[in-house]
Length: 288
Ligand code: ATR
Image 1 (spheres, rainbow, N blue to C red):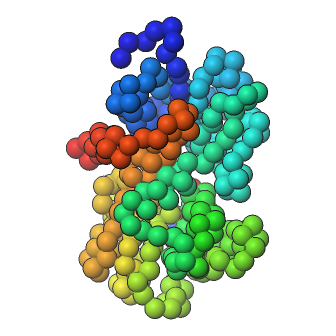
Image 2: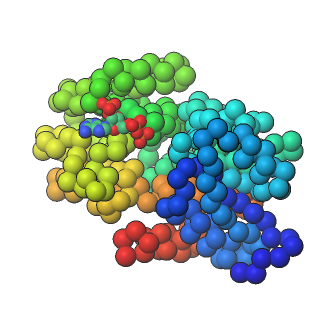
Image 3: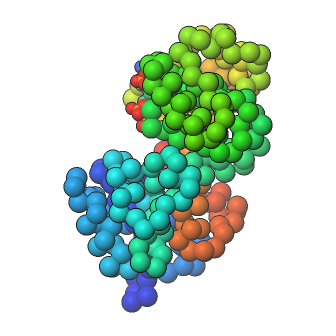
């Protein structure tokens, strides 16, 4: 593309940002959709988030993504925050408005769109969620907001599961999250569950690790969704498949969080065909 006087700028703030795949998503979309826009990662040092956001606004930057470790801290630098992002307490997308940026959490909307695209529903469903860290906590909120019937939240540290459940149940105004220790999966009634893997266990280079390895657990799982996409097939996914279930990695979540951010910045929907082109490029990058 040719950069000119009217080229719009979007970017990513975080630390580190060197290995991000977001430029692939946004610069590919700009090319496909004929937008005069470029997307650039900006490493931001600790203690300089507010200056970075104010500087971006002054420079007419159209939108920003926010990554680790600033997804919570950035909320204090915004003029408004979307309801879901506010509840989760994490923002990954800033959209330029009059007077400042508004924050959104497209990570969770992206997960929701990725699952919907595979025919996976949350509304009315009984779900198993592994983990109670930052990522799993956000997924628990998503499930509550999207009307899940029950979410069995399993975590190694059961107190952490209890804290997340109490917090999400209070916000939801109903007892949707049921906290459990990992070994308590035997108490989950029946089978045919959607299981979402929201821990960091199994992430490369520890590809041979899994939170729960027992067959009896996987006999309960009809669909497994791992938030990890590196390795391409996690051990969790392998075990789900070995027991006859369908399994998905987190690359479509990454794809759609970017697509939703791009749509918010440009006020225009991305076609499914363009989404698939971007997905092909991402897959090539991480899977060859
Ligand atoms: P993130 O922000 O990526 O969610 P995190 O907040 O550090 O990262 O949370 C990591 C999650 O992985 C937690 O649920 C953690 O369980 P604990 O709360 O018991 O620490 C889980 N986890 C990490 N290593 C684990 C392991 N070896 N076995 C089981 N769970 C593990």
